[in-house]
Length: 286
Image 1: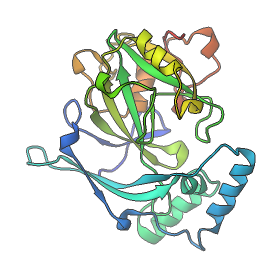
Image 2 (image 1 turned 180 degrees about the horizontal axis):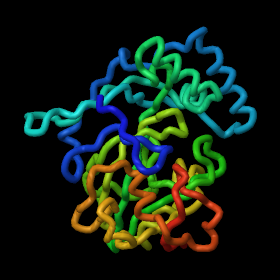
Image 3 (image 1 turned 60 degrees about the vertical axis):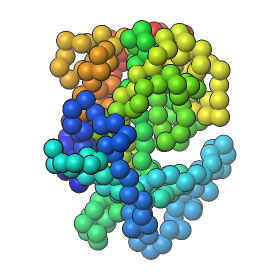
Image 4 (image 1 turned 30 degrees about the vertical axis):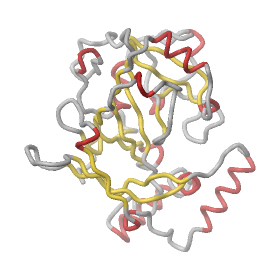
């Protein structure tokens, strides 16, 4: 696996960067094996159960669900034939995520993982998240305000994503094939990895807003939608330029900060910081 590279935001590390403008689906392969599951906690997993039960008392709307766990990712040498990226995946759950990555002992678990297994993530659930730079037909990027009811980053602003599940209610026929830009680690959740994509939508920002407002099974996970002009800082070489597919393989949350740096949210969004501690940005909101 590539060594993490520290980037501008200390809360995010770039695990790997895909070559060119990103990798299409046919160039990415997944290997699912129990060998890629997390290790049982030192002393047993009873602590995870206790944390989960405590969480449910405080947030009874939470529910457990299976997730894919990212063990490692390897890029093939440039010019080699076949898939260019291999993702080694295990299975984990949302309960285990809250009981390891989000537990008060997460720092200690990473230290023990390094000592016992030579891997800081060995004892962590590390469910693989997904995020997307979603560009509309009228050149806006889409962001969501996270609900106060979610366990991770409540009330913050993030790109559409989560886990490999539907988001924002957009019909699949309106979306281009996702291009995988790279994989970032969120250090606020003990290095939990997220695969970051670029997706072009054939709908305008107003049409996307109407689909979002129609609700859905996961509507409770966000409370609003925000649109950011993609040309805001197109003079910056590290900025995501959605037009003409000119995005490059950088960590999405880093790109979010670069796109939004130095501008302002509308008044109703001023008290909602971005996920990963990013600054505010220029946007239009319903």
